[in-house]
Image 1 (cartoon, rainbow, N blue to C red):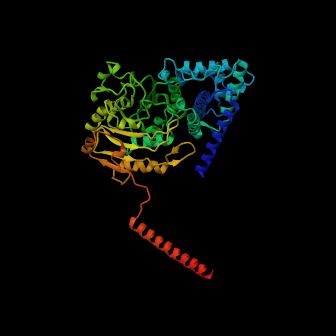
Image 2 (cartoon, rainbow, N blue to C red):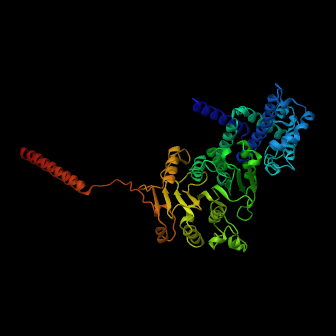
Image 3 (cartoon, rainbow, N blue to C red):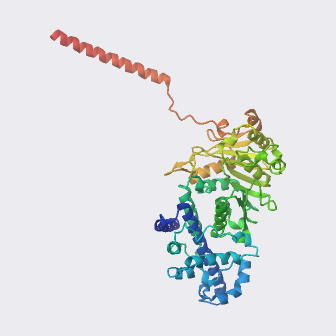
Length: 522
């Protein structure tokens, strides 16, 4: 019954999001709309989070009936310092989502009201430990943008619709685990627009089922870890999947990620808050990971999960400093300038803890191409860092039908064999994309843990065989594919043909006999 109720609540939530989309259709572009809805959801979330935190504290102190939302701004100021220390931010009662909503329709300066509230929230964290986590969080919710409307009146009318739509979302009370609803709304919006935004959206979104598979392999047989890291974290779905699978409290030192795209970087930090990750438990950085990594002081990481961008350009050997970078220098060669895929692999390996596991989605070309990429594969295999290669089905990701792979790295392997899994048939067909089911994911993870040879599915391959195949890591070189063509029994077929010919001859004889009798009669 609980699952049925949860599904009903999720459906209602998705309908509410679609209702806002319908209300604003034609006014705001889809991908921008997503940012506005998520930003407004974030504003509602932190308003309710803070209010509930204060109200609970007052009730525990015996002050029943207290409501922070009804307090004057002057009285609330007394609590600012303590709240910034504990929650990382502060919001005046007059600037809470619920109070701005009450006056929104009659507020001719609604855009200015919201802009001031957003600025004050960010400013409240300045000079505190949470400053980096709040700085610029509302940058993509530009309430004065022409994207919202050509005039102030039109912008404010759309802002009212946006506020009302978010207010009417069935997100429940914070105490009732409403965070699951906030998180689900976030994921629904991301998938809703990633599926039709092509590369502009799809590159920032890893489907939930792929996230589940990747993360379950990276944390296999672990109950707690020190840190989780994603060098190309996008909107943070892989980091949060680790939080969900292990439990937030079992990631002792928190979640780390870096993202080059500013909008997505902001979305990632918002996503952390919406999934109840406290400001002191995550560190998301904004910069180019390959050229300006921001977590030198935080590595190594026990779990690394990532879906880095496929075959992007980077400076490579045009930059003379990079070949001496301790992340890339061990291989003696840099990834090609036109394909940075293996640079992300080398970066992840360099920052992987001795007892750690990295699971990374890869473009299939890096498994077999020659040149510098072959030399890097040779370094990885010769030093026994590759634990497993998995061939995934095609058409799993938004915006591309390519059949991707997963590379699993380990620094401390039990032997020098590499596991190859052919999971290309582990899927069900969905409307626009193929999809991994729970059974598919469990099948793959169970094989990853057991490392048993299974005909047509998996093989543990000795180091010497990979060397013989010149360090090619394509799964189909090591796991025989089942011949699903119908098998023909030639002997049986010939016998059937002979029987048919015999019957045909007998029939002809009968016909000839009948014709002869007719001719005699004539």
